[in-house]
Length: 198
Image (tube, rainbow, N blue to C red; front, side, top):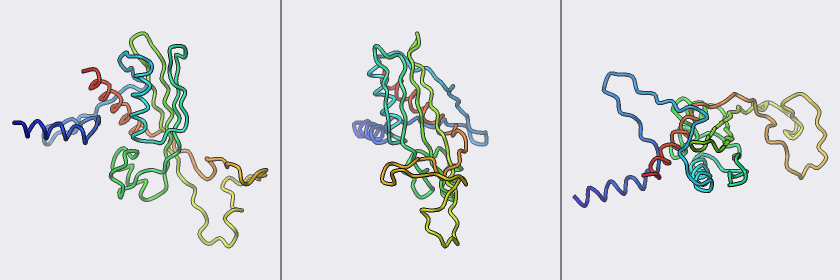
């Protein structure tokens, strides 16, 4: 019995706070759980909620900027660094939400960036997760010119300081939002918050 309990505890520690898939009877379509976006997290201190949001989002993306919710500031915002999508050869990464997304990222270069808004409401905290997806524009393969001279958008740009940081969106086409990953992050936020309340 002790070994069984130890095995369960070790499994929970290794798995973390990931939401378990819902079991469905054989021969029936899988149950799809939809979390409203934005969704409400249960009440807590602003520091606890912000730490929880940062901890979950950090499992998927590297965080670029944080404006945390506080006792004075009722609205918080978290921005992430654009991240090239996980491929079929990278099963340990969580930023590609399903097989189709992993296949797409394997066949072409896709990147994602998340923006999370947290605001205080009477019954808890309202959390909105927005994940934006972009496709890299292919460079000409038979080009004889220097790649530093190639432009993706056809416009002329004067670079005042070539050593300074360059725009991050050059060479990327927006593909809209990645709702599958938004749903996965929201599920992770809700599952971990429920476990923390027990």
